[in-house]
Every structure is written in C-alpha cells, then in structure tokens.
Amino acid sequence: MAGIISESEWFETPLGLSVLERERSLFDAAVVDLFGFNAVQLGLNSVDLLRQSRIPHRFYASAGSRGSLLCDFSQLPLATTSVDLLLLPHVLEFAEQPHQVLRDAERVLVPEGHLIVCGFNPVSLWGLRYKLCGRASYPWRGKFIPLMRIKDWLALLGLEVVAGRMACYEPPVTSSQWLQSMAWMEKAGDRWWPMMGGIYFLVARKRVAGMRLIRPQWGTRSITQVLMPRPRPTQKEFQKMADEN
Image (cartoon, rainbow, N blue to C red; front, top):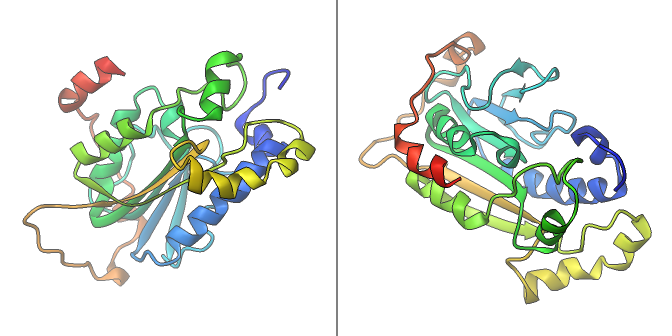
C-alpha cells in the first residue's frame, strides 16, 4: 500500500474493513454476556466495540485527541479495581511498553473482571508481510507480538485466558476483488491451520487466589470514583521481560 496511512484511514480501506467486520463480530459475541458497572475501551475510538455490551457505564479512552478519556495507556487514571470490562483492540503492538499496559490493565480490573485483547499475529501471512515489506503505514509500523508471549504475560499477572479465536486467514491483499475470491480461506483456516490467522482474539478473566468476591452496590459508584490520578508505577516485576522485548 503506497504512502503513509493512519489507523483510521486504514480501517476504511477494503482490507481494513474486512478486518473490522471480523473483529466486530468477535467483540459483539464476547461482550454481550459480560456484566458489571464500568466498561472501558482503550484505543480504536472510531469504532464502538462496546455497542453490544449491557454494562451501563461505558467509556472510550484515547492516547490521542478523541475519546471520553485522554490518557497514557500505561498509566491509566482509573482507580484500582474499578473496571469490570476492559478492551484492548490493537493496543499492545503499538505501545512502547506493552507489558506495562497489561500490568496497569490488571490493576484497574475488579476481581473476576474481564480483559479482551486482539492483535496482529506474526505467525501468519500477515506476519510474513510485516517482515518483508515497509513499515511506514498502519498496521505494519507496529511491533507484532507473538500470541504465546501475550499469554505468558497474562498468566504472570494472574489473568486466565477463558476464550480465544483466530481470524483473517487470507493474505493481506488490498484489492476487494482478491479478498472476495479468497474468502474461502477463512473457513478452511479454522480447520487446517488454526494458529495462523492474521488476528488473534483473547478473553481473559482476573483471578485472585484466596479472595471471596463481593460485588459492589452498582448504584453507588460514579465516574468521579473511577477516574482519579495516581503515582507512576514501578516496573521492577517486568524489567526482565522489558529487556527481552
């Protein structure tokens, strides 16, 4: 794809729209049966991925200029254990410290709260395109993170993966005609090469050992109790992984 293209522009291309259609379907199916009081979507604010959620208070955070909450995703201005559902759509591969983003995500989640992560899979035809071609444009300028590394980070934080899917098995061609002609690869991929989808989608639950879960009284919590400044966290626990990354 010629020229430099932004995230919002890319999701309006034939390839971006194809990805978005699959991801919307995955998010819609995942969030509809998750309950709580506060839900937050980090990034991709041009798309409402919480549209099927029945959680009453939904917020959209951005690291740029759009969204109901502008912030650094590695230092969320949210109270500890205040969020029931947190979405990270293509956040980690564009974060300078993806492990720290996950660490802070775990901090703000309530016990038994859910985190949903989707990202570009480097072990796929998309990953081949990522390695061989230029990286000036979205999404190729990000750093594709292997699925197993994401799962290791989640496990280290006490986040248990409870569901997962792959999608977008077709090669990342830009022509809508080529995309249509290779649509058969989506069904074949789940059967014949299930770990090689261009997109991975994970649903994780925060587990707290030895804790008895007592749900708050939903009517007493307000946004002023959720949004609050906090000091910058240390990274001692993640220093080794940060060096490897």
